[in-house]
Length: 168
Image (cartoon, rainbow, N blue to C red; front, top):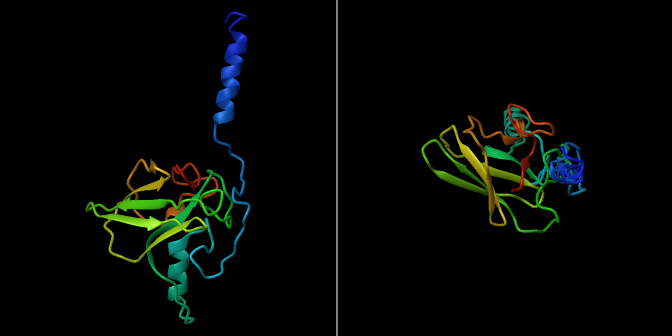
């Protein structure tokens, strides 16, 4: 590389590095929430498993059963308990769309706290999922065998997921 080309190459590398997603764990909304019983409870945690556990407990408590559920965030590495959703709070709501193995479409709005859920219905798995926000769409690459979205979309990502479900 010629000495004259080095500054331009360095500037291009710095620009690319600045655009790369961060691996830092950060709560983009700055709002940590607990497990109080509402649609924004326990963001980032497994929804279906916990609701099934509560319903099977025999302690008189009932929780809605979901076909699919999860949390949407502004970045890929948000901690459990951090309210997700668009930043700033109160912005337009996103929607998660799931297409079943039989081609049926289901849409779940994303709450102010970033959670989405569809109460129990007979969905044919595997499903394909996407999220829509402000005219943009982000779709999963492969079909999924379960509707427990936060199972793989963890702080660091599991099962091939790159991290949290992110707004497009």
